[in-house]
Image (cartoon, rainbow, N blue to C red):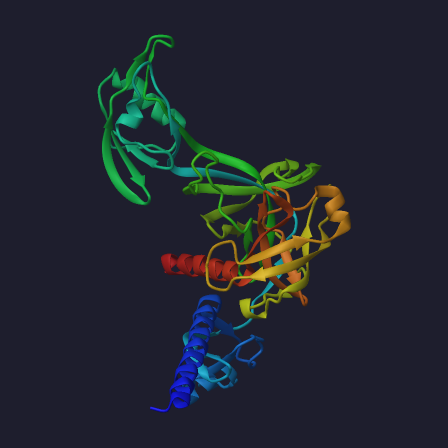
Length: 410
């Protein structure tokens, strides 16, 4: 073979391999960073997305764009790279856009656990009975000797009545039930039996309301779950309620030490019940509220854009106010409370709080006159930045709770 032809073929093969590798990487990154599910309205293709979306059939096109009743509620599509290379399948959900009342106000939270959340174990003398029985931090104690156990008092009573005999304990670890036996040890210094188990049966605090759904009288707040501080485990909800709260002062955030809103329950009479404590926040039903307030549309996740936005929050004894922020990054592919990275840019808010503070979680994020998300977490090393959750994800979860209640009632 001619040497020049050989070199040409070799060079051409190397170049093609290089560009094929680049294309493969682009396809992989596109598949990873784009959603697997999108919602659209029947009024037309309202979303803007940086990649082409091709629909598989005429029925799918109807689903996305047609306003007639014959349109199916779900269809399939494909995300296309360079408007021609199929990268991944996409589920399209045709729905009506939701409108909600904006929150931004503080509210008090009181929850009581379904079982006892284990915060840790400790020695009793030279033994550690709970640890020896296999109990771990984050486990949930469900019953003792066959009796449901939801309060500290119930557990203490069972230990005192044992007279040192083994207790049969039913618990869960990572959601899986198990049984074990704990043998109480007599504490000579206290003159009573102990099992060296630290548990929590309730908690209370202040958070920020995200939205109120006037159609069914429900609410959502926090944007993240209420967890046991020692174990980090989600507190299993038996019952709970919300009350009015007011902010009295602010401990400013500084690098390495997030601050907090300091407040009190201004009225301890319940204003609503809590029906769910989830990774996406707390949800419930209001007893009485002015449901005639103005509403705003909820953005679909693909409508959220990097750039300027605002949060509505309360950091003093005045009504909620809007403050400027920037949406720095967006992640479409998870259902966690970490869909966006936001940065506080408002000088007035930075002067008051130093950035994001505890208690601000749940503050609604508004962009292009739509509710796009809620503040969830602060970055410890840079308190001007933090995470936020898509409002669409919170709406979906709230709708699921409402549907489950209707099904149960039926």
